Amino acid sequence: MLSLHASHAALTAVDTPLLVIFCHAGNGTPVALPEAVRPVDEALHGALSRTLARRDFRGGRDETFVVTGAERGIERALLVGLGKAPSSRAAWRRAGAIAARAAAKLGCGALHAVATEASAEQVEGLIAGLALGAWTYTDLRTPAPEAERRAPVTAATILLADNDASRAAFAFGEALAAGQSVARRLGMMPGNVCTPDTFVDTAHGIAERHGKVHVSVMGRDDMQREGMGSFLCVAQGTPEEPRLVTVEYRGGAEGAAPIVLVGKGLCFDTGGISIKPAPDMEWMKYDMSGAGGVMGAMETIARLALPVNVVGIVGATTNMPSGTAVKPGDVVRASNGKTIEVINTDAEGRLVLADLLVYAKRFNPAVVLDAATLTGAIVFALGHQAVGLFGPDAALVDEVRGAGERCGEPGWPLPVWDEYREQIKSDVADLRNTGGRPAGSITAALFLQEFVDGYPWVHLDVAGTAYSQTDLGWLPKGPTGTPVGTFVEFVRGRAR
Image 1 (cartoon, helix red, strand yellow):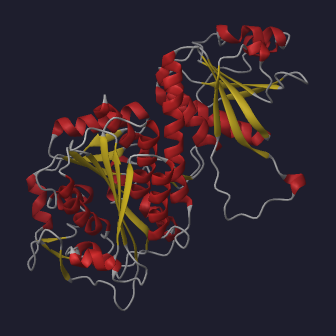
Image 2 (cartoon, rainbow, N blue to C red; image 1 turned 135 degrees about the horizontal axis):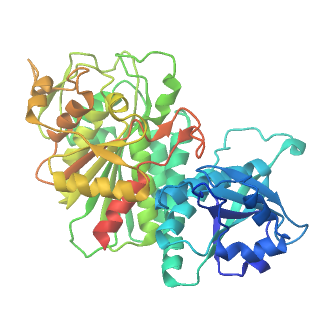
Image 3 (cartoon, rainbow, N blue to C red; image 1 turned 45 degrees about the vertical axis):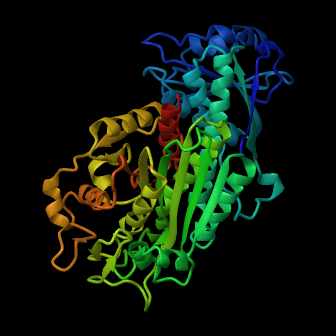
């Protein structure tokens, strides 16, 4: 993980291999050099101002330009464009990630970033972005020959204004970066490395690092005693032990109703008997991204010591075809007594979540948010730009949408009208686990709602946003860290 540091040192006293300077795009005129870095320009004999005057750098979004500095002090300066859009937290997060990726290509190893004129919100985004851009997963790679290596970015120092707001923003950004690192690492692990027991180990790691955290774990026998036939039917095709992991953070008043975060943790999803096509199936290691998001959020919340009670619930298993696997047409019984006709074994995430949502009720939750890479249909509806949001309470859905908007993980609500419920009616059971292709994300959410009892609830479908199969420019292909930011921002909003 990137080592982050805050500093109030004068720019002229900075000794760094790379100084990052963020600039807004000009409106048909040369980019204006930020006032705070004018002393740097003087130290570099006007190199920055000449670059801007010649319009070699125009401040466009994702644009970068490297200026060579001196042998000592500031060795290089990296100009990074913020574009013309308002400088939101998301814009600074993106720019921070671009800066870190550029630094990695240069092999600088460390950088300083100028944020003395940035708002607290922008500082939060910058720190999260630097960590996102610098993050790599090298656990399973053989190191390149030493002569061919470029130093990864391992340290970043943020030059901040000397005030309490900037210091608090730094602490928040650092905690969020840690949580996103947890989620991304879980996502990047292949299915034979990230197993249900990996979530157990991750939960215990969170408890060991932070106070006020309690972990409990259930296995197959425990779940059978609880009558979790919906979850267990997914796990019956693999000899690997399924796990229901609960992480309780007790930062609020004793007895106060907690916020409950629920995550789907399919460590690998073949589709089961309704097996997926072979091309691109390797991406199904990311079917645990909802659970990874819960673990990442719990790491951040515990680091911040937020004054609120939060419970994270993860259901982890693997969906495999075998002689013991659940079959299309089988009927199973969930822990609330409802029977489910399994029409498609590849609609397995909702079967796991069904029992988790019933289990969540025992905590007397103030609100429950669940996240899952649940449907391919959400990608057709919203692409890779937005999280699908579902819930019967429009005000609560809008609260979640606002949290996502603030943290740069935008979401959009879709209807959960009763008319769609007709599609999940069964001839032999209380309901069926899929309503077919039309409105597939909506009928999946309505299926989950059947297991929500007496508490406010919102479902987040992150199938299009939790990972990317292409390089996004500011992020490489792979895990994005979504929905850690939304979870944390929602909890922070409730804690205020």
